Image (tube, rainbow, N blue to C red):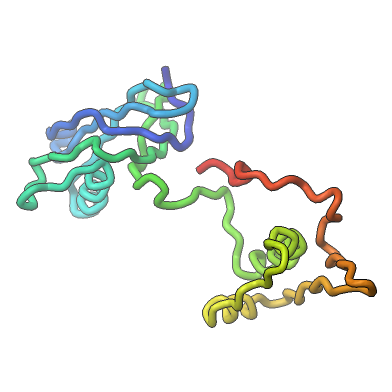
Length: 198
């Protein structure tokens, strides 16, 4: 089975050192996919030891659990003790055949993958847009904690961003929602699965 391009939780099974066809020193690791429909599938990754790639290769081995006793690279003690995230891409062979290739071996939870990242102005605009939801999610009877100095500096750095309206108390002690706050009776239920998968 060929793995589709994407991100996969995996564990290293074994490894060995050798030489690529060009003579470059390399290490080959075999991984088992741990989740999804591809659970149980195996895929290999090749790390190279050149001036430009050695640092990243050693880092990837550490992500896989290697502790390198006595700082010896050839002692892969600990390999497979930790789970990692593989970034799999599709590449075309010299014969024109498409095949899966592990591009990166990352520490599990070490980052997020986004198709396009927001700049600071866009982040502030989203914050303003979603303020009502943030206010509505606050426990009853509590107020928002004060922002740190760094957070305040960041929040005021956005150009063109306008301050969000704050909800105020109406007559009779009733709550008047901010313009972007969902109605209390129709507020969408809180979900823990809204974050996109990495």
